[in-house]
Image (cartoon, rainbow, N blue to C red):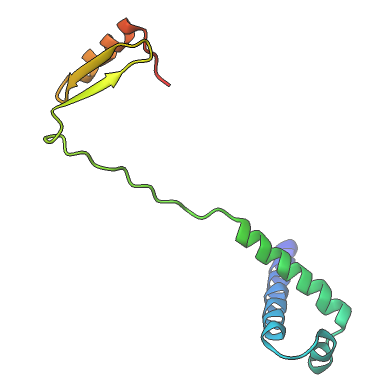
Length: 114
């Protein structure tokens, strides 16, 4: 329980320093001037500002979710497909051919899946 309270205080402290850091960045004061105005020790401000920057860097390096849509094929428009196999054989296959039958044909031809 005590550790949870400590982590919560640290998170709140980091948020406070993030606000101060943003305030300094948007202002016109040097760091020593800003610290004097806010009654903060410069060394403390620099330490926390470094932590805030590290957190920003980590957030920027995180992956963003990707949404990939599978293209749709109009089956009625495709009458047949021509496959050129690595062994030089070409197959013309009707679009309504049974998948199990195709699998058997490929196995007989020695074609393996990726």
